[in-house]
Structure formats: structure tokens, C-alpha cells
Image 1 (cartoon, rainbow, N blue to C red):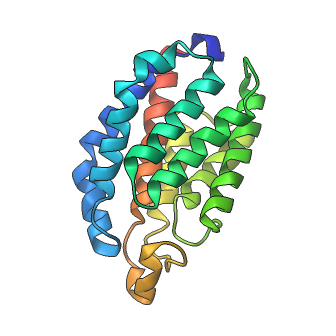
Image 2: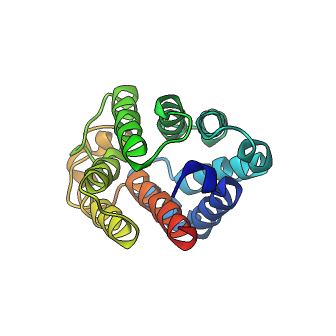
Length: 202
């Protein structure tokens, strides 16, 4: 599917609906090892993006993604706002005008690197990178749709036995073990929303 065929406004709505439906779950996960506000923050951020979806959808995709990232930084708050914002802003910066799959996969990889640099983190430290990196690897190997969703869900689940080495959860040390990382879970939910939406119109 080409960027020109993407219904960005509908995709934003799907992502916002998904996060809203799981806001309580994300909050509960964050109450265990964080500030307890991840669900509320992510819901607020996605609703702010939804409010501007009409404006974003008429822009070139790269510009729209940068606008989405900026809005997330401004509205999500906490550590997640800058990280999710960086993901979208860097993706927008790296995408060519009308990207094909290969160009998107390459840009996504660079956006993940930008998130790692912003958070001074890497996969294996119980963060959103523990979902983003496996999803990127799955995309590189040619997976799509339900396969990508399965990878994201399994990757989020795999953060449960990890000890947090970055973020507020890292202050808990060994007590962070046994809890899913809320950022990894919200990332997996967004991956599901995107994959399901693209799959329904591809």
C-alpha cells in the first residue's frame, strides 16, 4: 500500500480509540512500576492528535508525522511524550515523499535509533524499545499484518521478567521484575492499531 492510499485521519482515529479502550490497563501497569499516569497521558495525547487529524491528513505524510510527534511531545507529558514524539518526528524526517515499504522500514529503523538516543536506552532495558526493535526486525524479514501484531504482543509480554534499567521503574530495581512495562504495552497497542487499519484497507 502506498502513502497516497493511506487514510491518515481514520488511522489516527483507530489509534486513539485503541489507547482509550486500554487506558485503564495502561494506568494499572504504570501504578505497579511508575507514576500511575501512563494511561491518562497517552489517552490525552492521542485525543489531541485526533483533534488535529483533519489538518494533518491533508499534509504530505512526512509533515503530518512530524506534526503528530510535536503534538505528542506537547500533550502526553512525562517521559513518554518526548519518546513517542521523537519516534514520529524522526519517522517523518526520514521518510521520502512517497515511500514504498522498503523506504518505510528503513525510516522506521532510523526513528527507533532516535528514540534510543533520546532516552539513552537500548533493547533489553524494559522500555518501549523492547517492542519497537522486534517489530522493526519483523518488518525487515518481510512480516506484515497479524504476524507483526503477534511479534509486538509477545515482545511486550517479554518485558515482564525483565529488570528495568531505564526510566522511573529502574528505581525499583529487582521489584520491577514481574510487571509488564507500560510503554512497551502502549507501543504494542499502537502497532496493533496501525497493522489492523492498514490490513483492512490494503
